[in-house]
Length: 309
Image (cartoon, rainbow, N blue to C red; front, side, top):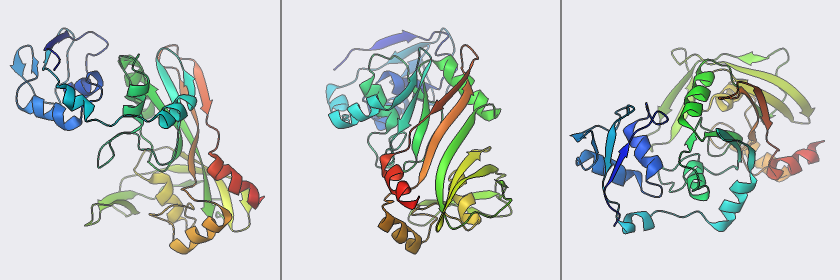
């Protein structure tokens, strides 16, 4: 069992939620344990009980209770194979941030039955870093560029740039059918809902949230169209549902593409969702310089795509 820690919050950590701070400090400890010790009052800020959503202030003194070795040991460990894959997938890195080419099938964070996501895995792999947080999310089955911040100031600046639409994300997707001519943007409003099974879905409704995706045709193939998609808003499953709305669903999409279309695409060799975050363009959170990062296409998408040419 480790001993009690008393930590004084510096300017780098000021403004961070208590629960997120503890999760970043107690690497390998399950979320359930963190929330339980907060609820029981074992975590104190300035000697007072505190709620998980409390935003830490510079100078606050945080009491972190002892962590049993068994609690850490019970947490999943990153395999050597995944560690090597993610280490080789770093596209850009400096003192403030990094960009990773996330593989399809890996969630960005753990939860809902997923013990290890991208962020938990990277915290284990890069245990030399005192701070590492996701800047934005990417669907589990989507591959491509994901930004991680190595400093809180960088996280806040990049997330603000996303809100202000200063940062540009570009995706590649292969859709079924021929994309309608002259359609370069889709503004269909989106509504998120859950099925009785708990599965989360999105549909177009008049009272949904305003949404905007810009599209550009990259190439035409027999029965398919390769597209660039740039989401201006950041709604759940936005690109996927906007493509479905245009009757050109993304192939390999088990939620929004018909089974017969997916089966036909599988015969060509497409065995996953063809949605890839191909590039990011942003202002560096420290220098302000323009940075562009591109992620190579997954071989599982590139190889069958060549068969269509």
